[in-house]
Image (cartoon, rainbow, N blue to C red; front, side):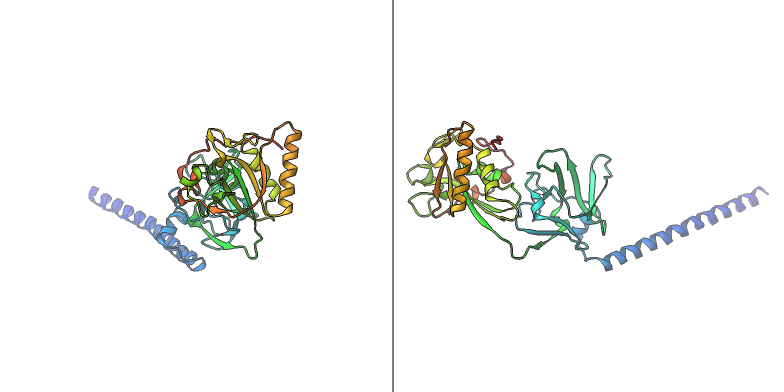
Length: 321
C-alpha cells in the first residue's frame, strides 16, 4: 500500500514538473521570436555593437570614434536611426566618452541603472543602451552631462555649415586650446605658430625666441553657434592679459598675449573688449595684429590635455566680463 502511495506521489511530481516546464519553453520561444522581430525591424548589429547597445556594456574610455569628434551635425541611434543629440550640445568633459549637455526632444529616456546608483540613458524608440547621465558637475551652464558610448551612435553631417576662423595667442598653446576647444560651436582647434619671419618653423626654433613667432591656436568655428566675441571673451578670461612676453612661469616673446584678426569686424571686437578691460582697471598688454601665415605645430602638441588627461598649469578661468 505504501508503495502504491509513493508511486502516486511521484506521478503527481512529474506531472507538476512537466506543467511548469511548458510555460518556460513557451516564454523562451516567445523571447527568441521577439529578438528576431527586433533584429528584422532595426539595423543589424555586429557582436561588438550588441555588447553595448543590447547587453549594456561600455566602451573603454578614449577609444570611441566620436570622443574628440568636432564636426557639426546630428548624432543618431545606431540601432533605429532616431536623432538623439546635436553637435552644438557636445562638449569636452575629459571623461573619455562623448559628452552632451542636452538631448533632442524626448528621444533620450532616463531609467534607474541596475547598479542602483546611476541613471542609465537609452533610446526612447528602441531602448538601445547609450550610456549614463550625470548632473551637478558644473561642466556647462545646463549642468548636465550625457555620457555616451560612441558605438551606440551614428553621425549625420550637417549640410552647408558656415565656418569662420580666429587665431589667439595667450602663452603656452596647450592651455589656450584647452579652453577654446570646449566652446560649443567650435569645429576644430589647431595649436601652431604665427607672427614670425621664418617659414614652417619647428617648436625648437620658436623656443629660441629668434623667429618672432607666437605660440597660438587657430580656431575654426560655426558663427551660427558661437560668436567671435564669445570666443574672444573666453580668451581674455582664461589667461592674464596684463603680463608682457609671458604667461605664468613661461617667459619669452613666443608666449606673448596677442590676437590675430582676419577682418575689420574681428579687429573692432578685440579692441572694444580691451577697452572694456582697461575701464575695469586692467593694464592690458594684449596686442591686436592682422593675421599672417599660420603654421600648424607638431602632432604631439595637438589636443595635448585631452591626450594626457592633465590640466593647464598657466591658464585658468577668471570672470572678467
